[in-house]
Length: 89
Image 1 (tube, rainbow, N blue to C red):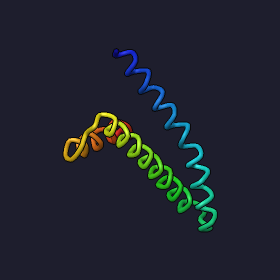
Image 2 (cartoon, rainbow, N blue to C red):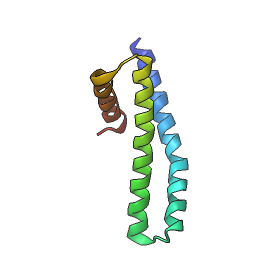
Image 3 (cartoon, rainbow, N blue to C red):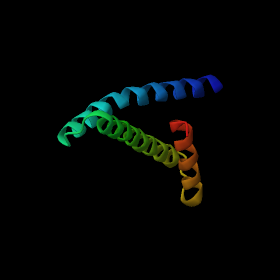
C-alpha cells in the first residue's frame, strides 16, 4: 500500500511540474500585455506561476476531500494540510 501511495504522489508531483509550464507561458504573456520588463517582469511572473500552482493544489485537495466525503471543519482542515503538503509550505 505504501508503494502505491508513493507512486500516486510521484505522479502528482510530476503532473504539477508539467502543469506549471503552460502557467509560465500564460504568465509571460500577461507580463507582456502589461509591458513589464526587468525585475518587475521577473517578480510578476514568479508570483503569477506561484498563484497558479496554489490554485491547482487547492482544486486537487478539494477533490480529494470530496472523495473522502469530508465536510465542514474536517474538510477545511484536510484541504489546508493537503495544500501545505503539496506546495511544500
